[in-house]
Image 1 (cartoon, rainbow, N blue to C red):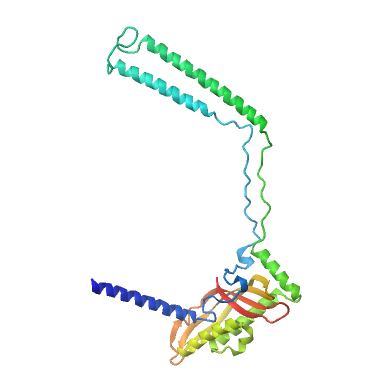
Image 2 (image 1 turned 135 degrees about the vertical axis):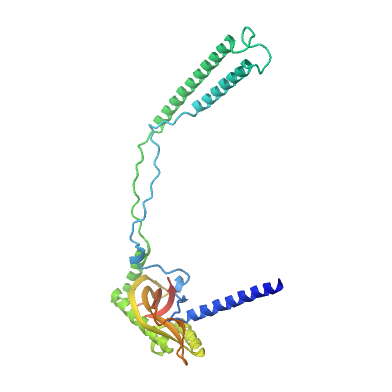
Length: 323
C-alpha cells in the first residue's frame, strides 16, 4: 500500500514538472510567446475588445418590451364561485355518502319517515333545500363580484398600453473606438488609420525578425522599456539553453484597430493581429527540432497595444494580449 502511494505521488510530481517544462517551452515560441505581457495603462487588467467588424457593436440592442397593462374590459373569473361550488359539492357528497351507507345497512337505526332502510322523503327534501340555499349564495356572490369589478374598471380606466420598441442602444465598443480615435486626431490631425495599420504590420515583422535573431538592437526604439526587458529576458534564456526560435512563412491576414484612448498625456491604440506562420525551436548546435513543427503552420490572434506621447510622435509596442 505504501509503495503504491509513493508511486502515485512520484507520477504526479513528474506530470507537474512536465507541464511546467511545456509551459516554459511554449512561452518561448515567437515574440510574445503566446502569452500576455506589458502595460495597457489603466486598461492593463481589462480584456481587450474585439474590433468592430467582429463584435458588430452597431447592432441594435434587442428591444425590451414594456409591461402591458391588462385591458379594463377583461373581467377575471370570480373566485367566490369556486369556493361555493366546493362547499356545495362537499355537503351534497357527504349527505349522499351518509345516506348510501345507511341504505346499505352499515348504520344502525331507521332511515326516512317510516324508519325503514334507504332514502326517505325527509332526506330528499333536506337535500333539495340545501342545494337551493347554495344556489342562492353562489348567485348573490357572482352579482356582487361583477358589480364591484365594473365600479373598479370605471374608476381606473386608462387607455390600453401598446408595445413600443426602445430606441436603438448604442455606446458599445464601436462608439468608444470612434471617440478614442477622435481624441488622437485632436493632437495629431494627420493621423490616418490605414497608415497606422500598415505601420503596425511593419513593426510586427521587424520585431519577429529581431526575436528570431536573438538581437533586439534594431527594434529598441519600437519597444517600451517594459517590453524590451520582457523580450530580452526570454532571449537570454534561449541563449543559455542553446536554442533558436525560428519563424518562417509569416503571413499576416488582418490588422484591425480595436481600441483607442488617451490617458496621462499618452495615446494608446490596440490592434488585433490575425496571422499564421511556421513556428519551431531548434537546438543551435545540432539543429534538431525540440519544439513546434517545420511543416504545420500555427494560426493565432493577438492584441498588440501601442503607445506614444500625445501628438505626432513615434509609436512603441507596450503590451501583447491573447484573444
